[in-house]
Amino acid sequence: MEKEFLVNQKQLTKEGYVIVSSYFLDYCVEILGTGPGMLYIQLLNYCHKGKDLAWPTLATLGKKMQFTPKSITKFHQILLKHGLIKKISKGNAA
Image (cartoon, rainbow, N blue to C red; front, side, top):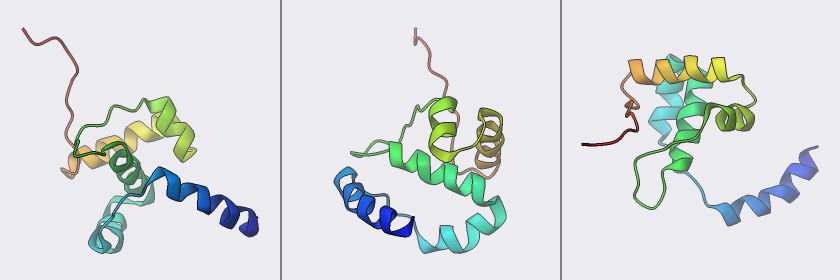
C-alpha cells in the first residue's frame, strides 16, 4: 500500500499544492478537529490563481474526504463559527 502511494505521489505534483501554515496544523486543528481542518484545506485547494471563493458541492467534498454530506455540513458550521470561512450566497444581483 505504501509503495503504491509513493508511485502515485509523483502524479500529485502535476496538480499543484496548497500551502498550509504550521500554526494552523499545530494549533487550529487541535481546536477545530481533524474533520473541519481537512475541510478547510480542501476548500483552500479550490482557491487558486488568486481567487478566494470556492463552490464545491457537498457530494464532491464528501467523496474526496470520505465523509457524508451531513458531516461536511457540520464541519462547515464549525469553520463558519470560528471565522475561517464566510458564507456567500449565489444569487442574482439586481
